[in-house]
Image (tube, rainbow, N blue to C red):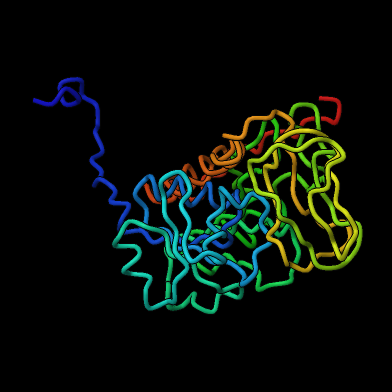
Length: 300
């Protein structure tokens, strides 16, 4: 006799979930979206990703978007390949992630995903086709620009702090502050920015050490200098057009080159929230509305 029967307790049997039967589409392949795609692929889910034709990702060493330029890339053991629609199934069968150039979701009806995750971090900008709640059975948005219950089913908080990675089933994530996160006491000074519109050129490599004041690259002849010493953690592809004040790269003051080639704690926290939301949906929990946690005051 089963233990639960002896105790007079009801026992609900569930059919074990086969993640391979669920197709996940991730919009964007920058470092945050890559953390999501990587974690879901590691968990057994077939993952397809989409990108623009010239991604402006900075943390290229840990972004599947690099496959758009190089044809393929590997992030912590998971390979992604830029492919046409016809090659998707072969790449998925090989246990890899296919990436399509499809900023407008023109392939949505063909792909017919069960789950759609918008990880582009557009923060409400409408320069490409917006994600809609009707795009898949379950739609998740990362960060600001989404409202759970309206344009997505769930939102995952992306702002560093106490609520990072939390899944929200009503409302929105914290608004964009416009300020870079603090790393080892440095925020804005660690970011490299364009001083003018033009074409960015550089011969620096991610993972190399720089000193404060060193020239990292040029925008139409105007030098771009590091404001602090550290390791080049992110760097825009050379030859791309940029706008004044656009981010070109970032310097990690901690000086650990290994951090440049592994997925960040922030990306993994966000990915954990996505995995939680996905399983919450797949196991039939439905749109349960847990109380939204209070926002911390500015002094906290």
